[in-house]
Length: 131
Image (cartoon, rainbow, N blue to C red):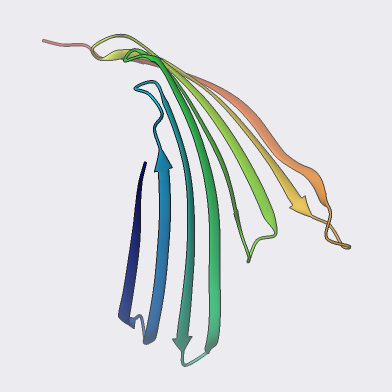
């Protein structure tokens, strides 16, 4: 179990800002990692003040150093969007790997409930030539 707390304050563009980031990670064994993080930033600019909040949940499973599944859910207070990403990475050998990614999003509808939004699936192959 590990965690962290980070506080920053100072100049930000033409104004000032203060941000706080907290995280906690739990690794019950060498293959599994779960994490939770939260961020809040308050900014004061000549054009107006605003607050930014972000939340994130991670769930990663490493079957071996060569085969990993990483999952992420995140949201923020500005977009009204909740996003989910699942990434499966398989390293065949050094410089050669493939990655399968699923992205899915939900948007906040009037009334506060979530409706399905953007989604995509991608497959990536990397093959490095060595001389």
